[in-house]
Image (tube, rainbow, N blue to C red; front, side, top):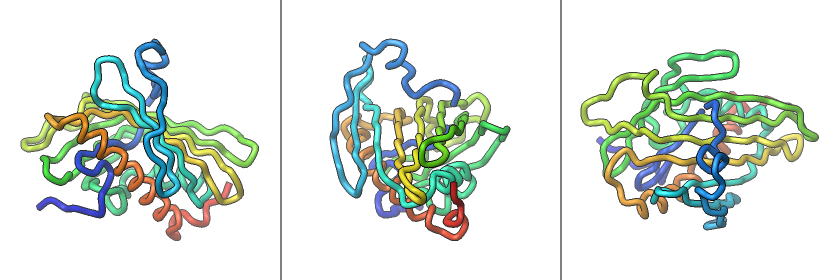
Length: 224
């Protein structure tokens, strides 16, 4: 049975999530002319969302910035605990760590989405930390690694493109400016305008889920 939490990780169709070695810039960093400039498309619930297009792709890349009332260490701990995602991340029904090293993860994730079949993918993520004026700044990068995960499953659409990043910058003792960038395929024949519109809703829901989780006892006491 399909679950329909109050919107989600990509409401309508709505993919995304954690981890990689390459910069999210990818195509854009290597060839700036391959991407348009960022354009602000929405501001709601304290999250500013911008989008841009990549050459030859109807799916937009999104960059979102919002404040989270928690230390950067706490927010990073939330994002670095993917096995807990099914308990709070919208539409996430399964998230397994296949391999963890000091600064990287390989995770398999499956999403239960409304109106369409389940989607899944395996991601390789890397993270780093550096000192900032108000505390540690964390960066998480990711890209697909389906060749390192489980094979295709009947009735589940495999997502081949999913790359992005989080940057967590402290703005005070217990506040963090989070910048989230995501570029993801749909894993099936979903119209681009539906995917692009749903992504904006989903991004706000993701921020909301992380804000709530960071306030739980498991993470709330993490400082600096």
